[in-house]
Image 1 (cartoon, rainbow, N blue to C red):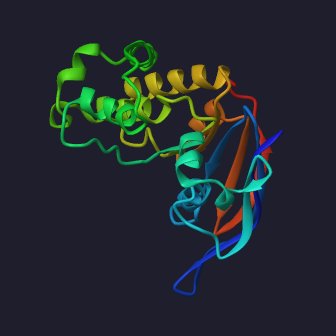
Image 2 (cartoon, rainbow, N blue to C red):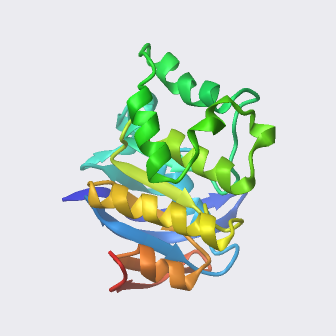
Length: 221
């Protein structure tokens, strides 16, 4: 079943074409990586999929319905986005993770947080630290945990390991692989071709705003 479907998507900003006639589908439970040169439009695809940006032409469907037909809060609960640059509010890690629960009028699920900390190799002692006390790898893993707290159907990932060392990258990949095995659909932009093979069942190559290639892969997935 198609969970996301880009149908003849084009985007122009101030008259300058960014993406031109992009069409592809993401099947439920699939993991797709997107590669291509800098400035080719890779990250823009994620912004469109997250509904942060609207296309100039074409339609993006989520479970067969145009994404604009969903209430923004519902859509963003079901399709989560983790940015390249991790961002935490100016409070403790615990406060950052409690905030989404508060916004939903729910009590904090401590067991869920602990499970995700274990999954991404994060020390529970970090809960009482502020964002200024975290390493880049710790902050990125906390942001990933925040993105998947409420078990979204789709996770959009924009170069989330580009600034991480080998150890942190392995922890992130292992955690994402496990979530994928549990049914999470992944759409990931990466500049690392080896990672695109490890993390993807299919790889889309974007060049000059067009899809230049789409190939099946045989990585760890």
